[in-house]
Length: 353
Image (cartoon, rainbow, N blue to C red; front, side, top):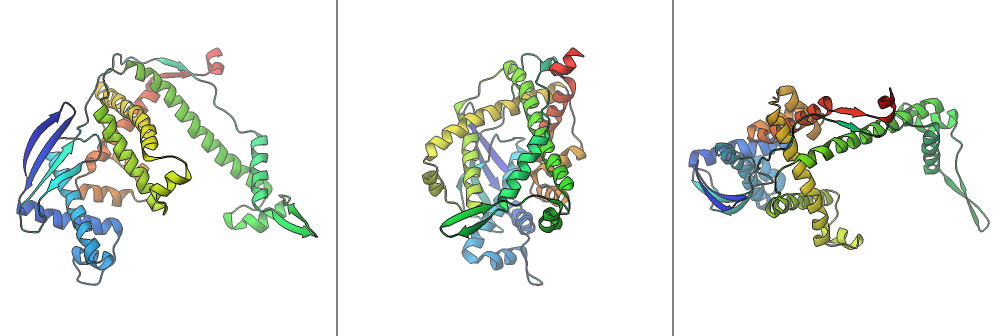
């Protein structure tokens, strides 16, 4: 690829990318094949990947999907060639005609991911409350809520009565045996397991927050409006996509929630700035401590993205040149693990000890 880099601002660059016919054809081969594999499109014997997309989506929609698939291959190749990790999704601003056996030129405006130092990398001690415990009363509440879900209504004249069943071994076996739960004791044990897992997760997030508060004070750098705006746009588009997957129109959501896009965007912008700083902190720790990631770290990152489909996802990202996204996530996970392992966390109880 021939790539021309232009500086648009201190935070943004423009890439003018000229792909050769051979590179375009590679995009049609590998990008389209990856698209078919990702969406598991069925086909008749002897069909090409493009035939599969046309057969599944129809000619008009297939044209857009094929273009997206090819670009999903070409863009990471260009970024890799320029050794650029974008701060957020890279969007094509201008593009010529995309066709097999022809050169193709397109333009992207990108906010590259910067790096920032910390004022202090020394380890430290933070004090946090003791982890909460699940009580028998908590389990009682869960069982009472479950019983209410199975409540029935009976009518006596003009009066309707709500009957909440008693949760006994017999009732549990009749209603929950399909879930492998046959006694009240087993039900209580299941609720306890779930509640403890939730509390453990929440407590871990609290501890991480307490540690990151110290690092936030050590962060040296200015997060520009352009960085925040770029990340916010990504977050907003992802939110709209999540709503669409649930069959909810964004405008309808705003109406039901008595809000608007500007208000949602402002809220997301606050979250975006915090996420950006936290990410840059983890990058700085990773580099300063000279940490290294290996294949298990990448696979653990894939597990976060696609649990149960790790190998397929890794192969797909390799084919489309997107493993740099996994690398960034794995590096930050490694840095966070280092922070948790090397800083001292005390509670009032173990402080006394």
